[in-house]
Every structure is written in C-alpha cells, then in structure tokens.
Length: 432
Ligand SMILES: *Cc1c(COP(=O)(O)O)cnc(C)c1O
Image (cartoon, rainbow, N blue to C red; front, side, top):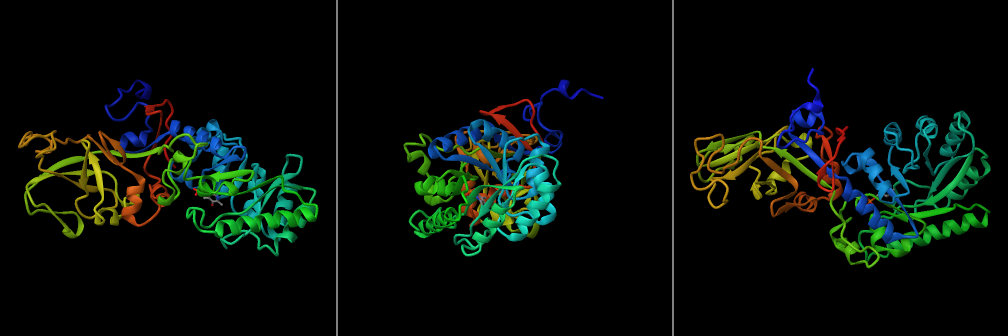
C-alpha cells in the first residue's frame, strides 16, 4: 500500500483532496474563511439579535458539518436544518451546538430528534403529544426544549393564529416540555417595498401578546431569514435565521449591496463557493463540425473544444447551455458547445486567435490545438480565474431562477474541498 500522505501532490489536486476528487477531477471549493467572515459580519449587523446559521440542504451545497463549524466560529450561536436526518448528520459529525428543526418532525422522527438533542419546532397538537412521548423515552433529564411556529401569512407550515393558543397551552401544560421560542417565516422580505412583511410582524407580535396574556412566555421570538435580517430592522427581534447571506449571496437582486451599505455591516458578503474541474481532453474540430447530442452547436471555423467532466447530474442544467452559458478557461469566457450530457460538457475554445495563450497556429501538433489549452488545465464554472469571474447570480439570471437553486443544484457526487482564506487546508472532507 502506498502511504497517501507520501503521494506527490499533483499540480491541481492538493494532497488533502478526498480520494474521489483525485479520481474525478471536478470539485466544489468552499472557503471557510468566507463563511466565518460572513457570519461575523451578519452577527455584527443584527446585534443584539443572535445569529442562527441555516445549514439545511447540506449547507446549500457547501457541506453542512464544516460550514456549521465555521459559522459557529464566526459568531453564529445556533444552527437550523429542515430535516431530522440533517440534524442527525450534524450530531454524527460531532457538532454539539443547539440545532433547530424548521418543521415539525413526524411522530416517528420526533423520537430520534429528541434523543439527539435537536430542538423540534411544533405547530400541531399531534406534535406536542409526540414530543411528550419522546421526552419520556429519552435518557437525559430535564424538560425538552421546543419552539412554537406561527403561520403569519406564508401558508406553508406553522399554526394558524386562531389555533396556536391551544398548541401553546398544551406545551405549557406538559412538564416534560419547555417552550424556548416563538417564530414565524417571512414570505416577501426580499422585496423591501412590500408591506406584507410588516403585516406578518404585527401578526407575530399579536400572537406573542396573546400568549403572554395567558401567562405563556417564549423567551426568544424570531422571524427574519437573510432578507429580513438585511432589509428589515424591525424583523431582527431576538434572533435571525440566515442561510443565503452566510454563503455570501444577496437573497435577491433587489438586496444586492445592502449589507455593504449598512454602516453596521461594514463590508461586503464574500461568496464562499467556487466550482472547478480539469479539462479531460482537447480535440481539434474542422469548421462545420457539430457537437454533442442533437448536433445543435456548429463550429464556424476550425477550432478546439475541451471535454469537461461535469454534466447535468452534477448540476449543470441542459438549459444553462441553451441560455448561452459560459465557463472560464485560461482566464477567458468560453461557450458551452452544445447539449449538456449527464456526465460531461463540451466547451468551445475557439481557434486560439487573440487569446494570448495559444497563439495563431501554435501548438497544433500537440495535445491541444491552437487554443493552447491542455488536458488537466483548470476550468471554472463558478468563481474567479485570472481577471474574469462567473457568479452564482449570473447562473441564476441565465436559468431564470434564484441563487439558492443554483447552489443546491450542485450534485452530491461532486466532492467538496475546503480552503481557508484561499489556501488548501489539512483535512478536506468528501461531499455526501
Ligand atoms: C431556509 C430558511 C431560512 C433561511 O433562509 P435564507 O433566505 O437562506 O436566509 C430561514 N428560515 C426558514 C424557516 C427557512 O426555511
């Protein structure tokens, strides 16, 4: 057996890369220093409210355990996930911080949630009953902390305003449970001019007052997602739940630059994720040749194309190419040449004129052609290369979607590598 620590570091794969990153040269790079800095910036912005780092969906594709750790180091006081399984994965990874579940677990999942110290959100009487059973079954002593969720107008999950008092009273009457939070979720906080946010906040305040009148006090009240935290001071309350901003992205184009302009923020959010691969092979094609399934893309002149080992299973949608999608090679934007396939894309490198790296006719007989691009050269799908950058927001605009969906769309078989302030660090973990 070879000692992996003694293996020579390749030019592109740090010795710390996971095995799969070495075997398949395509990876997501996450800068933990950016996560830490974004957490610190958001914590400063919303103080004295506490920052909850939302790390559901494998931390929006960034890898939940490492992001959770970095966010806590940066100043987040707790974590939130959508699913019990996601909370269990954090516990298995050794994360000890409080973890809030954003939806009410099913009765079966409630047992697992409580046994592993995840804080359930509750909004139905069945949820209260399940939490009581789970509390009785667990070995740890003391009441189980739970949070209560109000539906203030988003109409996804949460108790109706006229049903929530019964749920609160049932929690209050259960000695095994302790109400530690009351919260709601904002539907249009990323549209700062919409007054529905203020209406939702009034509904939450009314609910808090109604509970107080019955002697039921939730010590922590919260409403804001990233957009609420950034654009609505009144929504910050005792805690904010930030996902997208933690990863360095504005919740919507309308909120671009808001954190930077807020004197309490004192800086821009830093995108933490880049997406890269190595060129698998370069081939020279004659003018008129057509590429990939459907032969939809034709070369107008003789030129090189590169095959890049990422496809739609990995999160490059077919419509990214049809919308004119580009990648960076040798610091220049290059079109995706034709249909995105499941595992690979083809990239049009042109014929090398004017790109300053291949030269007219140079290198024609070698691995590459006039483009000067060689197998193993770095391709950037998202991130910087030389003076160029392709952002998550550019992808979202091309695809007619939001940055969230682009990030979450990067597939689980793409390994996640971690860097710290741009430098590789010692123990990169593979993606799930
Ligand atoms: C996903 C989610 C968040 C985080 O939203 P961002 O816009 O990414 O900050 C907050 N709260 C709830 C209930 C969520 O589902």
